[in-house]
Length: 317
Length: 283
Image 1 (cartoon, rainbow over the protein chains, first blue to last red):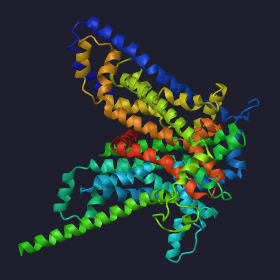
Image 2: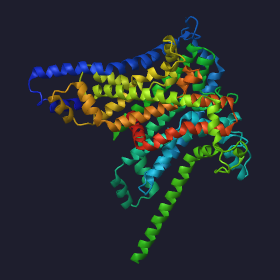
Image 3: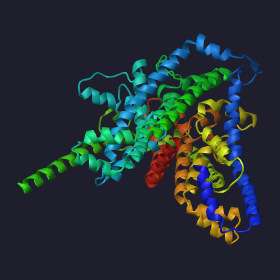
Image 4: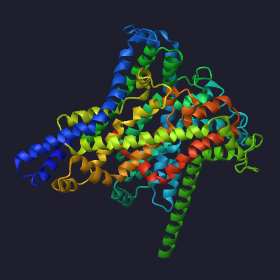
């Protein structure tokens, strides 16, 4: 795609610079300016992103408490992680539960919300603004507010449940309910983003397809399932992958909601908490890096799979 | 016969519209209720916080003043505005400059380099945060404002990507005319392209501002001193110390949320467009 675009630029600019020497002078000028323009940005990306990435891979084969000497342990960290650490299994299980418990409701609800926001009715702009508002709320503020909502004695959620005769739920106190609470908050927070992406895709669906289906007698739900869903498949798979990436890395909201240790007990002990605890509470940088790289590899293969699928779908069509 | 079906159809249309509005209002309530509840809680007294009323009987505005007593919250606000301002200015400048080079200038290795940029977008913060911390510590910047400002100051891959995508949509006639007039490439960027890139600059500004304002993990790892802390960090400290002082906690939350909600309301379209743009990038 880039190559054809470049040719187009070249063709249009060719008549403007007829003599060959001037052209190559311009090309040289362009190349030199481009290097200068990119240099600061490139340096920042290299120093603050690429170098740390490589260094954390290096660290994952070492044992280091962040202060003393670095000691090479080979695959020791990974062996300990996969065979000797009972917390790994707990973190893995919790992360999977958290990911599914956030992903499935997010996709289901945001599909409905996007479909509703896609209607052309008066005042729809107002509803879009309101429903996208949680996008601007930081996960920390959100978590503090939700702790209030979840408060066992005074929280509005238990108050409302009390009105309909349901006993107080130990939202953040009981390990199992704590996971439910965390999923609930994350779903609330991630619906607006998913909705934005799905809505953008829905608005790209050609109107005449709906018209044709309507003439053929297809109802609203039928049109949604047979036209909208297949045509926004790309956006849908993007939402899936981004949600999974965000859930697997989740840290802020869980840290604030449950007090930073993945409690109560190990009810919300996920990978994000595990990495943070090992690195900054126990000072085990090598071990934390090994966990981080394991997760990174899983996410990378997931993203690769998504790219592969969407490309295959594109060639099929 | 005919007027009858028309009336029935109109009745059905009205019913549909009513159902849609009802659904929209319900959804909007779900999105807003926690925020509205917190807003009402922020002006309640400690005794009234347990009552399920949305409008407090005796609004107690002193909760907001209390926040500033517990912590140097005003200072933290100034800090955060300063950090967000510096980083946003740096991001917009360096990302648009690099984005211009990637979109409009030709040099060897451009496409390969750009692919590498795209790949770095997938690197999660959790993987890099430990070496980044070590790097900052080696530079002697932990617990100083530099730790918060410098890493974001010179731009990142995401902003560059965003700006490049936008610059590619501008017509080439603009710069050709400028080139014939003898403009340097810098002048083309500064005088011709950047003024035409207002929508993309808006998007990047809003996204960067919101990200820095809401950032938590990075300041948590880097900062210990209250007088250089950010507001989100301050909120977590307050929460740790005044666990069940809900009115004050809600007031502090609202103080952090409201300025951003204001920015969001003003720049809502740019914000949403930026997210949609970022979404398209991942496909």
